[in-house]
Image (cartoon, rainbow, N blue to C red; front, side, top):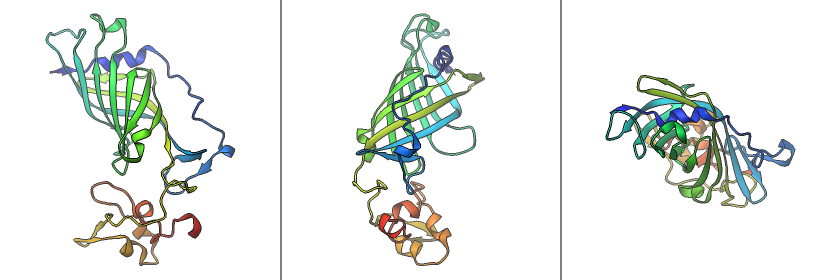
Length: 233
């Protein structure tokens, strides 16, 4: 197994400034329950600011020198700031006998807090968001990489910005249904606690508690109990 080289070609072009999803703030409605999201017409749009992503990657190929058909994989590229999300899995195929002749073709799976995912495909620096999981299944947009690739042994790092929209699933201004999620829970003193527990206290800290698996906070999963529904704000 060798160090991934396909991402080296991210440095061959500058990041392209995308305008289609960057609507002036006065034309957007801030979503209190979805950080970084805006309602634009009948869609909810999320812009994940440019971040440096770092992690380990390997190249699978028949020979010592990377060439056409070799596949590179990165299983967990996370923000260099120490955050867990977004987390990126990448699968890239080298498209030319000499890898420097053309960029690879990549499929990227990006996971956000709460476990929701989007898929992006294409050749760096411009990839197209093409669906995802759950309410992101009809997501569309762009993932733009920058020209600051760094390789150190088996670790790589590069910058990327993500802009995508998906249909508003509820029609209300926040993009979140005004109902508590009965499946949400957190662990408190070794016991499972649901939305009623999160909202049954004057301390707002309970509503910042997270689900142990999805990391979704009570503020998002329990908008009624945590008084986050639009009519309660």
